[in-house]
Image (cartoon, rainbow, N blue to C red; front, side, top):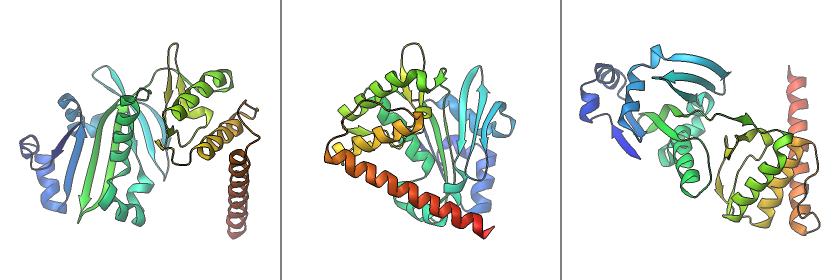
Length: 246
């Protein structure tokens, strides 16, 4: 991964970035692998959008064409603007940076996800105030019940390596003829061991509305199931309160 700061020669020659730095007193960092993709930054306003997957207050996700290559553009709007997230960004960087690093890690340990292309951060007084992430588009089908066996096998592999997917719903896997890919994960070390594995199987099971085979007689499953039920109850109570407040 290469890192470029605003004072790099490439950006000194770019008038847009000179004006941005002078006007907003911002600090910009770009994480990337291949310098050819830095051209995207100059072409943001004129990107050839193929499809918009999501566009709401939480995030914007769209598919665009870059010289014949399909890429995905993600803007984590909510996390870019939340005060607490901005404070945390001093220590851990932006959501976009973390997604870039996570994708690199997943691919490097023998699992598969999209290839990260570029992560952009803009800071003000040390806080990240804007960011976006660009990655390759994965051709394939979104995970569904017909691929449950392959998805379960991939989840087993993740666990055998000592990690958790972090959001093990069916739809957070992409399937093609040869491989199973992780997407929209919150990939992390499994410090919870059997409890963590049990919770991920419960989450996968709920997303397909079918029972899957895994150990359900031990204490780890029972505690994970109890926690899952409590979180559902908490969510239902919150939703009722919100509806009453409208």
